[in-house]
Image 1 (cartoon, rainbow, N blue to C red):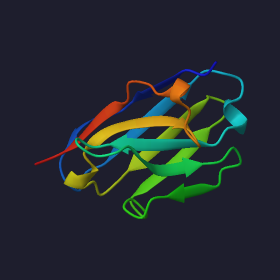
Image 2: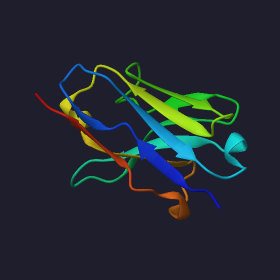
Image 3: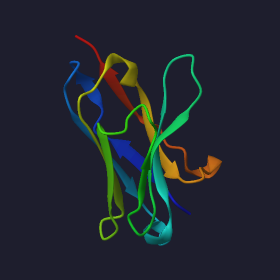
Image 4: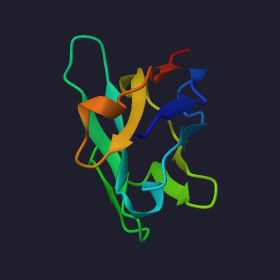
Length: 115
């Protein structure tokens, strides 16, 4: 069984940066493609960045060039470095496998971009 805990969210001004972390338990982590998802109020949850077990990354067009996903398999942790944040990035951010599993959704971490 895999358990995921997200952290690192907060309030930041437009143009600022945040780094999110997702700590995972479970021995399959290193071979599992992982992703960061977000859900803004009134909108569907969307995948914004993903990384394979081998480190191949993919990004939604809305965050390409601003967000960077990475992973440390030794620490069972996935990161999301978010730069040049915009108000439209405001959402609850979650990590999960790719494709996502309903068993793995955690509480998420709130990111608010506002002046």
